[in-house]
Image (cartoon, rainbow, N blue to C red):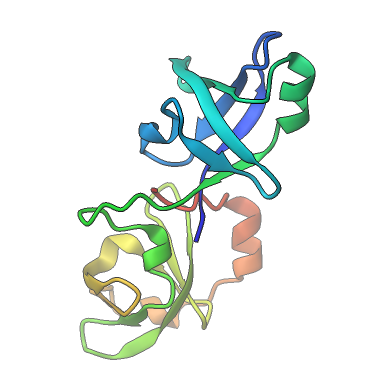
Length: 171
């Protein structure tokens, strides 16, 4: 499974460099030699540096401004980093959410990025803030301690999506 890790925003200069925004807290995704992918090609990092809160990146095969313009807007993906001390967003999908009363509330179908707290979306459409998670077995069971009535709320997920950008979590 590939994880979204960033986006190529725009060209920077005339030599093929691009401005990249990361959607991960793992800067090593842009180290020299790192391999990223889009829907239709691979990108190998030739060089990268911090610049005004973002990254200037040189990719192999992107050698002039025209090539940089052609890849602008590209979403970048990478394989999950094997780190037993990290929990990855994709590991939450498919897990059953159980509340503090040991009542099964449904299965996580996706995680929605939200500034206050990422939200677990259950197949019923219920949204559970990640901050209420008290225990978990990735891909199996997530125990939450939520305020009474949270599962009585209904949300139009389509309307919520029009106001929130899905971040994909950390990777």
